[in-house]
Image (cartoon, rainbow, N blue to C red):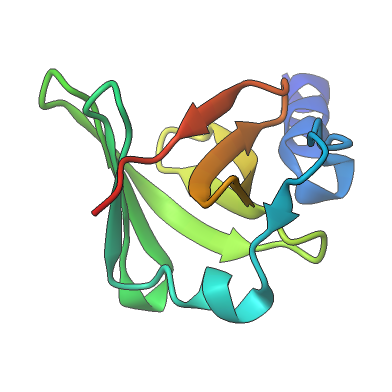
Length: 116
């Protein structure tokens, strides 16, 4: 059991962050832009909502209305890492692409954010 926990922690750590699958023209958000996420809610086209609160609290509300809670931090590589209360975690890279905000996950999937 201990080995499983150690392996899980190692692979969920931002140190193991993926090489980001960016496209030509993608501009990662600056540190200042990432810090400005505090107090904002980003809505995606599937109606999911990421809420970044001051102090590092985070929630994701699915279109169904269910929510997952955790904390977020900005990693050295400019990604935003979330540690969920259930023990899972993820890091995502936010970029501007053709004047649109896009979330890129560690698998390279791209999720555009709706304009506010």
